[in-house]
Length: 437
Image 1: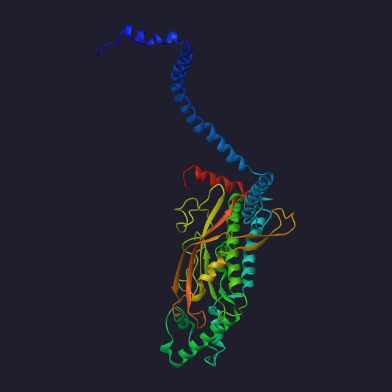
Image 2: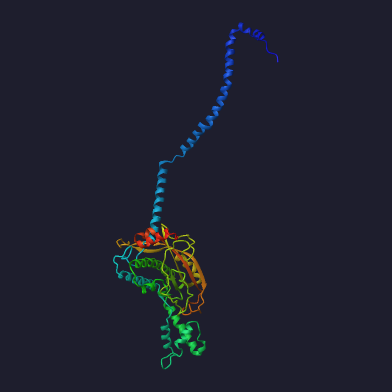
């Protein structure tokens, strides 16, 4: 590579000596060239930054400024939030009202006014009288008794001159226990006809078959024995819950059977049984003129469900007693027209009215609604009218089935916590702490 000769370069630049006027523009041009290139680079970078940051931010702010809520919109949203809060409070109040119910006695909860057995005997009498009133309201009667059948037979043409039936009551009992009278010829056929007529007359005069002894608690309070204040208060509390359950079931029957005057025209023919254990609610029972022989020592008391494994059935709701709800299970059975099963269940689980005057009866009467029943299990069976459980009952010509239900009944704690006995609260807390749940 040839290195330029400095002398040659200087020789070529000598012309500037004679043209000094061109020197200044040339220098300015060279400086401009040197400055222009870096400045152009910096300018492009700065432009990109402005585009990405400043201008983009300005656009976002301009967009958000266009979306700023007006004072009117803010007022509307505030009103909506207030309405939502009112709705939430109203729902909580309605839930509380479901458990604010009339009591059978106002002298016991949360603590009795006195320690004598009298107020507990009064509770028992009120329980039984209230059940009787509920059954009277649906025009219920049971099937004919042995004494009624015997009197009918004594008045029949089968009676001899000595006033004794040609068919003995011993033979009659054999027949009612599932035997036949066919072996007794014409007398047996006539006796069977008389029995059928007596049973049909009973069905015509009753709106539904029901025996109060088949409702749990009725016999318990009929044979009640006082054993101390603590146990008596607990018994009254649990049977107060049981009465509310029973009232809802019978009120449902009244609604479904409204307008009917006889079993033959009633959709629900018979309340077979109602209780709080798995032994309740079925017509398949030992025969004694169609009745179940209930043992007085049989445990069929309402009880709180403290876990999903403690109830009468695994709850599809997943509910059991917690800080908001108390839950019990119950079971009952009815004989019903086959096409009336679903309408009955819908009515059972619908809202019902009740009146509340305060737990001290110091408030004006108010009408609240409650809807606390959920069906957990159901079993529908055909009715064999020739079996001991049914042969003294007449259900009419329509197809009848036995509907057996296990249900859940939920109580809102806030509605009755103020009257819940301390012994019950302590018991629930103790069972929760020991891991019963």
